[in-house]
Image 1 (tube, rainbow, N blue to C red):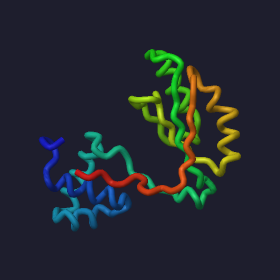
Image 2 (cartoon, helix red, strand yellow):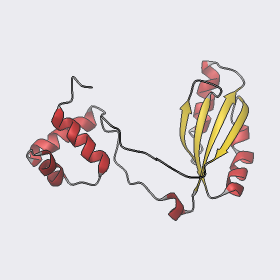
Image 3 (tube, rainbow, N blue to C red):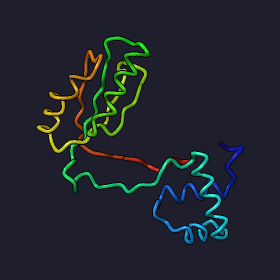
Image 4 (cartoon, rainbow, N blue to C red):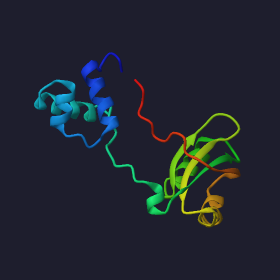
Length: 154
C-alpha cells in the first residue's frame, strides 16, 4: 500500500472515512488540489479497491434494532466444504451483519442486530440452530458499544 499511495491519496482516504458525503469540491479544497485532480484520484482509489463503498450509518436504536448480539460458533468438522456450506447459509440471514472466521476456541463469530432478546430467541430457534455443521454456539448480549466502525488509522 505504501508504494502506491502518496500523502495526498492517504489524506483523501482519511477525510472520506470521516465524512463519506463530502463533496468533491470540499474534498479537493481540504487536500489542496483541483477538483478535477481530486475526482481522478478518488475514482482511481475506488477502481483499485482502496474504497469498498460509501454508505450512511443508520442509528440501530432508531430503527428498532437496538440489541447487538455476538455469537461464537463451533462447527462439528473443519473441512473446506463445511466452512463453505456454513458461510453460504450465513450470507442468507439478513440479521447477521458480520461473520468472521477466527482462530481459537470458536470457528466463527457472528455480529447480529435484533429488536430484543425475544427477537433473538426467534432467530436462534428458526435459523441459527439450523445452520449447517454447527456443533455449538455461545451467545453474548452486548451491554454497551464502546467503539463501532472506527476509521482506520493509517
